[in-house]
Length: 170
Image (cartoon, rainbow, N blue to C red):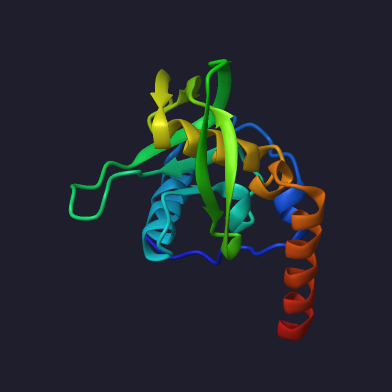
């Protein structure tokens, strides 16, 4: 396993729609393992493939709390097939938008169909933090960021800060 570089806004990859995974093989499983290692090292609770520059519909999540055993979940070609009308608000952050957090309202429960790391079809019904995290990471696969759910003024302020930062790093 190896740690990957996490892309930071305004990197163009973060706004692109990802392609489906056509074959779940050793290469796909290695990427999932590398993504998990990267997510844990960051530290974070979710990471989508475009955040490490891979434009495939893959993501990893682990919402276990500190001190609890790790419970990694790998999702290939995840598809949100149902969302509750009831909403929940969580303060979200993103490894691609470091040190910025904002309250985001999303459906409280979701059902997602996906392939697991062995290529088997799976379905999960999630609520709470896991539901929020799934929606956040699936958004990444469609080029959507959590800041797209906040006011235009706040979003523009965040983008301006990171654009300036990227010019100073380059």
